[in-house]
Length: 197
Image (cartoon, rainbow, N blue to C red; front, side, top):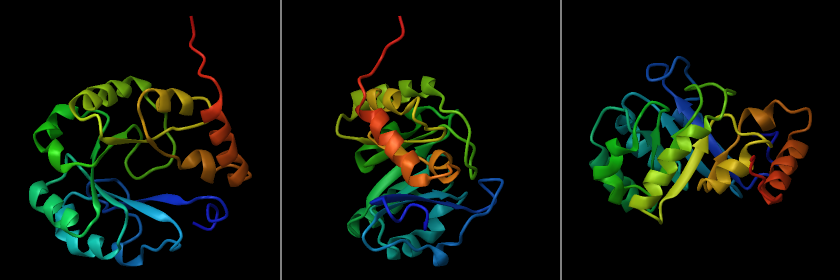
């Protein structure tokens, strides 16, 4: 958090229970961010809906749960929306968007997950952009995020493919100068998109 405070206005915070994921991350009651930032909470829990009230009490912009998690998603979405918070659903690389189609009216954001649960790094599998196209056809107003392997070489392709929220981890946090890495990403987004022939 200290690395990104000088330049970031929005932050994506991962929570992991060590059951749905191979690692356990920061507990919900220890989650903090600067009050001038907006926060999206990505909940990588096997049973995320047991923690709905604690997540709402954090007052994030958005709470993202996994489509593959257990529990009553409809009740969760209704409770979160009643608190004025957005509802997001994440899809693991192997999961098809058809599995969330029946609940799409309750979903504000879909996170296309292209990484390894609970870990920085990995490759951005741009073949997963087919999920973005499918979801855009169903609900053009849907906010679509991407998590996994974003860098200055592929960020433009992802944005051009319909991704509107780009969650960058390792590229910034492992850089010698995180702010310069962030500026490089912004510059790459504004460059003309080149297509290979």
